[in-house]
Each structure stands twice: as structure tokens, then as C-alpha cells.
Amino acid sequence: MRFIRRYLFQIVSFLMISIIICLGFYSTSKSTQDNQKKSLEQALYRGIVECYAIEGSYPQSLDYLISEYHIIYNKDDFVIDYEVIASNIMPSVSVIKK
Image (cartoon, rainbow, N blue to C red; front, side, top):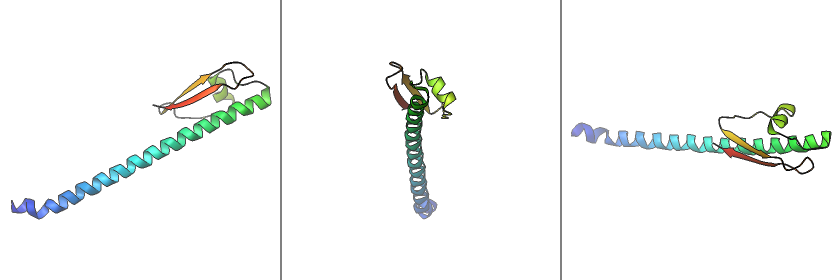
């Protein structure tokens, strides 16, 4: 009993500090993923506009946009929904976190 009382404060303090550190890592990770998503959306829109400016039409597929305009992203973290309406209408693009 004496042993528990003696070290109880240290054990509780250690657990609290561990929880605070874990929450900090989680917050940083979430912020980083949000920034990655925003950067990917911007890169996709830049590629779409650049393609239209150079070729006179919007990219007909996501694969073409990614390969020709060198867009790199983590396929394990994000899904891109790319819907083409017509060659003279900007495609609809959505980036979704998995």
C-alpha cells in the first residue's frame, strides 16, 4: 500500500504526459493530411488549366492528367473522383481522404 501511494503521483503524471504527447502527434498528423489534400487539389486544378491552355481542351481522363502533367500523390491516403462532362467544360474534381 505504501508503495502504491509513493509512486501513484509519478504514474499518473507519466500517463497524463503520454496522453498529451499522443494527442499532439494526432493533431499534427491531421493537419499534415489536410495540407496534403489541399495541395493535391491545387495541383490537379493547375494541371487541368495548363492542359486547356496548351492543348485547347481539358484532359479526358485522370490518368492522362496525372501522367502528362506529372502529378504525384499517395494513393493509399487519397481517392480522386474525376468526371469529364465535355472537352470544352472543366471537369469536376473531388479529392477524398480514405
